[in-house]
Image (tube, rainbow, N blue to C red):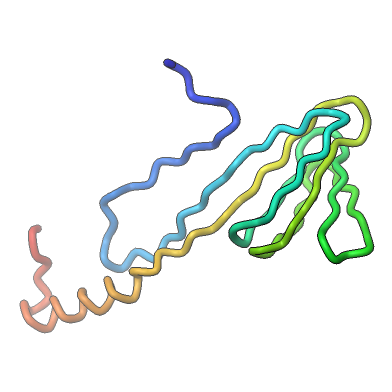
Length: 127
């Protein structure tokens, strides 16, 4: 295969980061929704759902109200929450899930940078 799938938005993440860098890795997943189909799943991480295309029906486990999402509408979903989605009408639509994965090693990197500065007089190792 020579082309990337249009369903995924792959962002390059630099492997070379400075010790003071506290960037957050974002994973964005595009999910196409076919008309007259209901898709359901349980969220494995906190995520932000954004609607694209036609009007989308969303229902959440344990909630009495349903949501009708128009293009650009955003709903925050919690880890463990079960949701169902469907497209209103005959047109296709899709949603994007944005999941933020904080770098849990940021504190360790800051501590190592302080230790390095104390031991070696602030000169970075390997530069």
